[in-house]
Image (cartoon, rainbow, N blue to C red; front, side, top):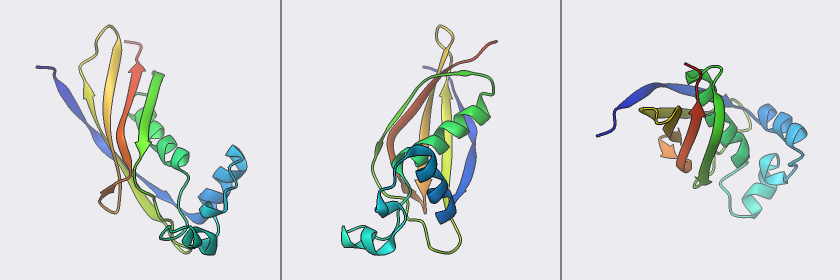
Length: 131
């Protein structure tokens, strides 16, 4: 049986200002990420965070857990929206479980939730850490 190590959960807050900054940085100006009326008109519960931004927060957690490691791969499925309120913030929690390294590579099974609901499906990362 492969040994696994639980990693400390990381919590990130997302505000509407973060979505504006991410849209500027990424070039993704889809109005569902900034306009409440547009988001609701397409059946969403409100303005939602960019899926790639949510995945980037998972990558940030991996970088926190393995400082200086080379990120070999990261992937997931986008399974539920992260609804961002007009005022205040929403929290995204990233938990991880690292498998024992094999040939210098460590696989991390991630759990990414918001409001107790999984928002990324089958998220995992692989890193190469210098030991």
